[in-house]
Length: 208
Ligand code: DC
Image 1 (tube, rainbow, N blue to C red):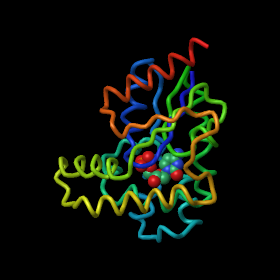
Image 2 (image 1 turned 135 degrees about the vertical axis):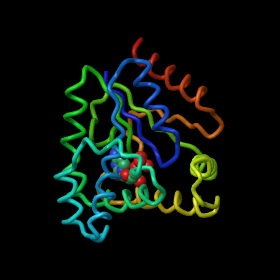
Image 3 (image 1 turned 90 degrees about the vertical axis):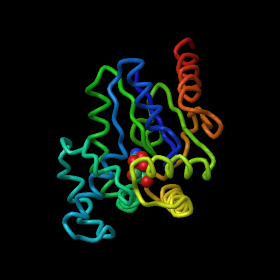
Image 4 (image 1 turned 45 degrees about the vertical axis):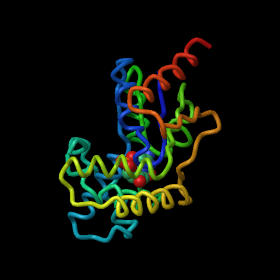
């Protein structure tokens, strides 16, 4: 079984995808980590995030063993990832890695922005996770504060809005729900309730 989970920043899709993968014993790929790793590498090199050719070069030579680097979660890396993610050359370079991952496992859960629309349009189950912007900003703010990051709620909200805008309005594989995706709104749902709702969607699909 292949499950595609997409949604905007801090919608809860990563936590949900990880839980679903563990529940069904499926492999899991956080595709945002690929874009984050490209952003990290380009920053370390001193090149500009707006240099498409350089970003594509890093995407083509990405070392998959560095995808669990905790530095990928640093504030600023998600925003930088969203900048390099707008380049079609970068997306193309990362596409085959994502498809090969899904093919190699007996089943997999991938989360990102374009999994149901572009990466795995034939996925058996597609879930598009949404939540109100303020609620997503509050969740991300709490997460960063608990890690001791010196952030303000207003600052986090502005970054989330900027990322939504960039991810939804780019020409290449923009963030949007696939026509056959189930929309799951987690605005008023905690982690457990969101997980239960996702299992119900997947269960209904399996019993069809
Ligand atoms: O899921 P995330 O917040 O870790 O993703 C970081 C950025 O990477 C996101 O703002 C846009 C980009 N991204 C993408 O364009 N396509 C994906 N499938 C996953 C992430």
